[in-house]
Length: 176
Image 1: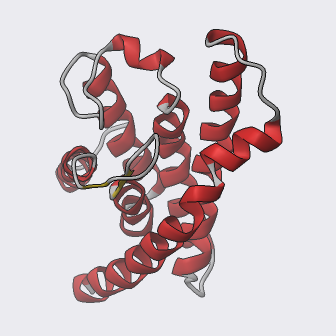
Image 2: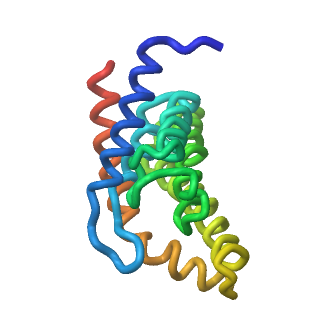
Image 3: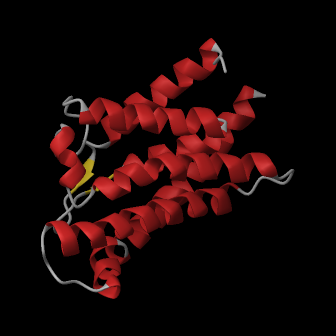
């Protein structure tokens, strides 16, 4: 299936914006808070599902090739990083956000965005649990994984969801 030039350009734009957002950091214990989630959700709110997912697939591939676009660098070894699951969650997170928004006649940007973040959390925390228990050989419960991998980020991510929804709505309105 062929992609139109506009779709390729917007996917590339969101790939670049995700990489830039990785370096806009707010220091936080263990893992910094970045603007990546906001950009991923905006990709889902502005682009169609396929293009939104493609923008994040490209981001992951670029980082895994060794180009330092992830918060802590890049390279294939990043697969073993405790936060890699969250990066992988960007792909279905962007896709499901776009899918939800494109499915209904009444556009609920906040609900679509919140669902996308939930998907990112679900995949990220699942792989964090796996990584901590089986790669790092630490015994940690699912609840403790949620305490370190989800709970501290809920408030900042809700703020990012609200901002992404508001900005995306304005961008969509201007395109019409």
